[in-house]
Amino acid sequence: MKLNTITSGEGARKVGKRLGRGPGSGKGKTCGKGHKGQKARAGGYHKVGFEGGQMPLQRRLPKFGFRSRKALSFQEVRLSELNKVEGKVVNLETLLEAGLISANIKRVKIILSGELIHDGLTISGVGITAGAKLAVEAKGGKIEA
Image (tube, rainbow, N blue to C red; front, side, top):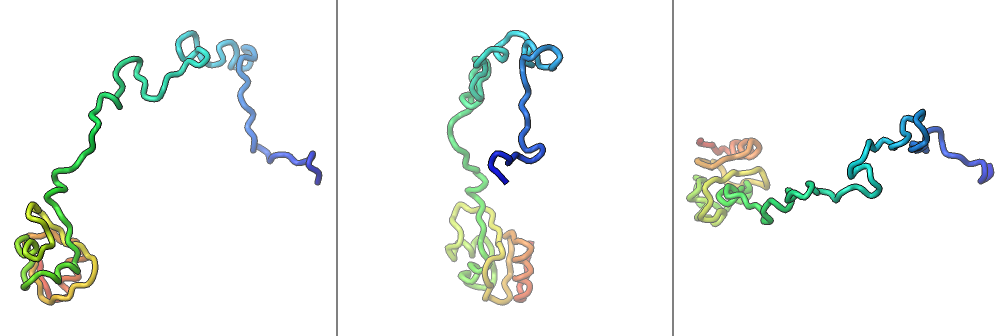
């Protein structure tokens, strides 16, 4: 093998279209750019987002972030954190007393994370995931809607 005999594989290098080489080529005369207009000119393209002089969308929209108001009243509590709750009943009031949620929280969901030590917990008025529900019921607890 010699360096001057090495070639690319079949179909590895695609031959580019030859523009402006007569009517028989299919890309002659106007080279596929049509007649006149900005896109037919050399260097005749505009920047991304340009809308012909109209105020572009990215400048029409307000420039500030978004914070969901729902997210401010919802919180998740881990299953292992229920060990801090005094007594056998878990609801919004007992979670607030245990310091697991803040005062402005209206909805809570218990998620499966960690081990539950308490036996026979009663969970009421609080959402719970399917995995956490199985873990509570395995410890002899019950869930009230």
